[in-house]
Image (cartoon, rainbow, N blue to C red; front, top):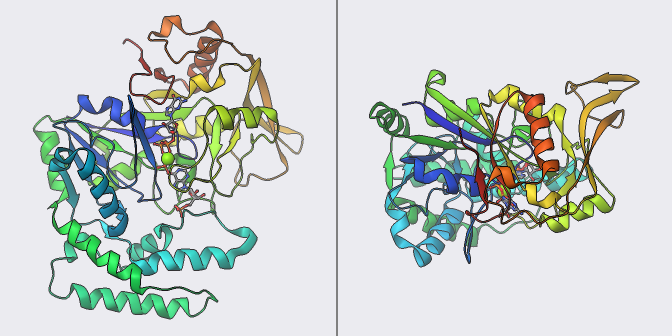
Length: 422
Ligand code: GDP
Ligand code: IMO
Ligand code: MG
């Protein structure tokens, strides 16, 4: 069996959590492959609402194994808080949560370094979630990091202190106040929580499962345009959010990748700084923000809103090799008389459909206008019953990308999901 990959095609928050939860009954294993608690994946069914940060979104499905893969960075404190919440509502869910021993640990000083570095950047700050992601991946590539597998070693404390001292030394260059004592106490409690879980060699575990014909879905965090390599650098995160990241982040060879399922919102949002060619500052932008409840699931920050950007979507489809598309938040467009999609960019009087090296003020989106629809579609259960105007938009996306739209999500609930036949 090959491993399917599900990931975001924009700047994150495309609805990955909801869709993984919807698809997870069809899989034996759900595995997060990169990122850390900068992610906020929301799940909703009936009155139940939950946001996951480090734990895969298959956790509330009976019999689904959830794996935190080697490409992830884990904050023991946030992990402990997530575990306590889940233990309260659904303790049996945690029976099948396994952690790769190669997962890197976010130290308290990584979070402090993140905050100090962002604050020193002033106006050029990235708008990081300040969860310590950048500094932890820096220590990983710098070959200084601590991993879950190190926790049980005799010299763990010694290695922790060595890295902490290194960080404290680095922090001297910043004019930044911090208090580490309390954070450290919580961190070591979090380490004890980690010790309660089964740790695995993720690569053997997943490859053996595939050999046994088990179905595995790799769950991405963030989105393609936040990828360290292919995103809007430097306004990106520090991991490979693209499909190839699933091979690295789980130890599964590229030839064993099955479907690449790419999720996009029917419009665009972005949290934090960085270029956003189709960003709206008018009543339409406000409409999308209010109707879509566009506030960050991790930081509560307002998400910037704008129209769909086809050059960027096609770029993401290309980089990831997307084989199936999922459109989320189609319901949010209901009520707009018309809406727009950028089909190209005008840069110094030249028109291009390719994403340039630098996205700046010289770039002007070229828009195609679509007729909107009035009716509320959250209760629609079949593709055929969707408004013709929405079907026209979906057809346009399929023609532009050359990839079928497989699922249309029309609300946050599990049940508000239309899976097309075939
Ligand atoms: P993720 O990070 O990709 O998992 O996405 P988030 O959970 O951060 O943000 C997506 C938000 O949109 C959450 O509040 C979801 O409950 C909500 N959502 C997901 N799909 C839909 C949809 O089709 N329609 C509406 N209205 N909300 C949705
Ligand atoms: P999910 O998985 C949206 C953004 C931050 C910031 C940049 C770098 O919920 O889609 P970092 O904390 O990684 O140093 O932040 O990336 N960012 C996200 N935006 N959704 C996310 O995750 C994000 N994770 C990071 O806002 O601009
Ligand atoms: Mg999110």
